[in-house]
Amino acid sequence: MISASAFVRTLIVAFFASVLAFAPAKAQRAGYTTVTTTITWTYSDGGDDDGAFIDEDAALLGDEALASDGDEADDTGVATRRYAPSAQLATLGRAKAVYGPFSVIDATTVRMAGDVDGATPRQFAAMLAAHPTLKRLEMIDCPGSLDEDANLILARAIRRQGMETVVPAGGSVRSGAVELWMAGVKRSAAPDAEFGVHSWADEYGREARDYPANDPVHAEYLGYYREMGLDDAKARAFYAMTNATPFDDVTYLTRDDMARYVALN
Image (cartoon, rainbow, N blue to C red):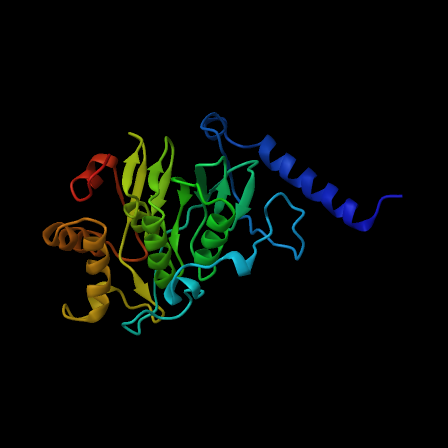
């Protein structure tokens, strides 16, 4: 007799098999699958799902800011987001372990597909606790951040880990995910890599251009860009360029466009 849990698992497997069967051939050739759905990973209380269990006690991030969920406003008191979803989301297929938007491929490589929210820094920390030798972050389809405070926390964790950030062939990083890519100690992108930029917006719908030039919220971003290696002139130019596009729109840049502001390896 088939148990209820086994029956449910059978239905889930059948659903994903049907999704993969109709995936575009181009995406399959690239090594990942594009589907018109967003997958949310659920973690059980047990540790029997091939690494899917997050040990919160092991997810120590080294300082109070990183140990928080990242779902509060930053030091400016303004909660911002920078997010550009797509009609399609690339999923990464089978992996050794999955932590939120991260899929561990081997001892040194992790792939990212999905957005950043308040829980993502903890998921990243739990992943590093279980896989401390990870050094390469491949960004497949990253639409940005629903929580920019958490996004900057995550970016600095990527930098502290000494990770290389890569946008592979067919990859797309947009909005806050561009800031994550900038966090790599080495940064690279395929010739057809896509970078989408636009203004951030706060919880009231106000954008960067709605704040005075001397508002502390701007200093938060400019300081981050300088921290990631941009000189002051390039940091200001990049920030101005991104905010020239309204939040509800996206300007797409190539690898060569990004190289005008950020050093590539």
